[in-house]
Image (cartoon, rainbow, N blue to C red; front, side, top):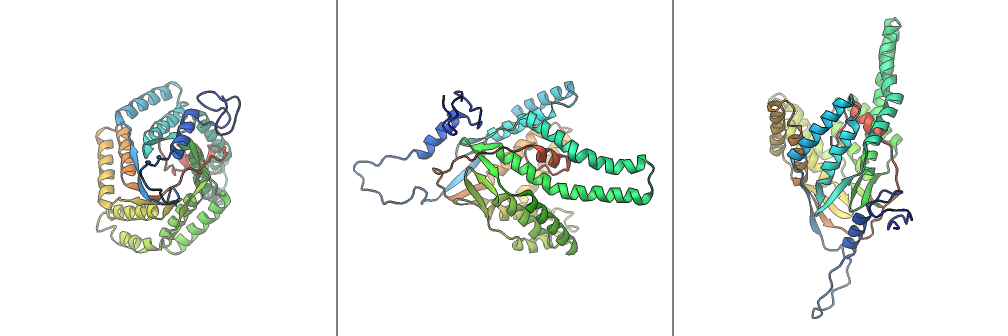
Length: 367
């Protein structure tokens, strides 16, 4: 059977070996996007306007169950024990595949195409080129009996290396995860240059330090803008038009209220930031909307912490499901969409950045 997307002659009836597309899903998506209702014979001719001229509201939904995810977690734990931790990467891919597959936009499910083998190879590369060298910089001076000056110099060098690799890891993880995510048979992608984000990250970190933290909302927004504006769905880019200045006052208020509110005021700032980020994100002629509030976020996090404490950590699947359902329930895409012209772009990204982001504590994705 010939693949309808890349015309691979050896494609099976289920999946193309060259581009990885699920043939049945791809054909169904094309049919759904091209399908238009036939006009009734007695109705007058409709005006010639684009199909996407009328706006709409497109809702996300999550259909997963914590019980099912708990079963996956138990199997992953047992296999990880039997393989001395080696199954960790395959278990992580299974969790992501389940969560993504239970998330839908307009009734059509997302799909995750990453594999445990990719994650394992990415971790091996991260170990060889980053993690082990950083550990060596911190331990070798002590083991060799070097003086305090050389020891502090090695630690400083290690700090510089970590600071440089943090933005590299963030971009690599974002690029990999988008390249392994699809909707209606078409994958997402990220086309930003790593060196541009490294410059943005280092410059923003320095300005944040020099301004005693006041520049942070603008810096945070610029990072978000870079990640969003270089993301694509097929051949269509996302857009971001925020600059972060509107977050300066809420940020200062949150800082001033940290002690009086025992830190709880930050939930309202984070909610405000999430609304701002989503409401300045666009795709085609549609714009995202968010209904998250500080109270809702406080209830979510408080419930998650209590759940983990009561279950001694075994409630993690319920926490993950709560977070996914909360994210879907509080985000909408409103406006005009014309998906008929969206086509797949070729891509192949490594998982090294994903492993680095996990090691550096920057893993903000699923599982």
